[in-house]
Length: 268
Image (cartoon, rainbow, N blue to C red; front, side, top):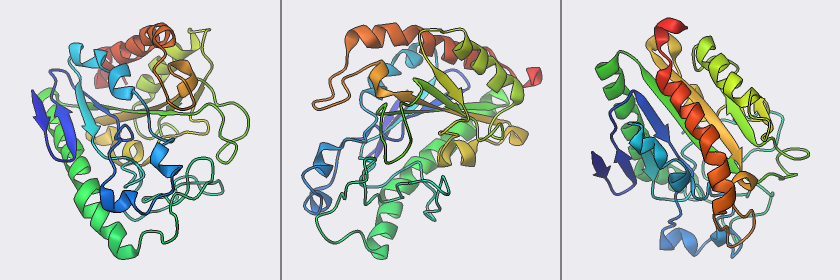
């Protein structure tokens, strides 16, 4: 069943898995657009095409939650208190004022506390209310719920990390957001795919969504996958999907999702 609201679209599935794609939105309200730099309007840090990349999950029975608005309006994978996610490293905040390359997003005035609170109420809360409600529905129906938080990022961003990012970056909040056996099974899948480099709880350990909702002791198991854009698309404007790369990547994503769906809590 498809539920389309003003700020997100939720496809309700028939399996205990929810796919969350918090950074695929590309809309920016006009009043915010007018304050942004021309570079910011390119929305370079969008998780481009992930709704298409994960479309196959619907056929596998997963639920899919997709926001409408850009992370430059508000970052749905940051805590509403705007706490730093990765202490000691460069970070972007709840209402970002810098891009992943460290460039200013606003021409002059950055969002005031009042504006930030307004965006929390208008954009952040509806998404998280829907996310939590769907996880609770799945848990009620199946006795447990699985959450896959899908992300993508440019392969090289010196302002955020050194060198080239691994192709596939699995995060489980250092093993706190899911059962150990689930992490182990996903790691095994990654380790057998020699065409792709991978890391588990490396630079990307899982953002707010993974850390907040992954509560294995309460029957909710969450993981985050941060993929390099180079795996499936053009990394520069106009950010076209590369069909050849996408088709090569899809089998490993399918195997990872199948592994999630086959896993049961009593195995952990």
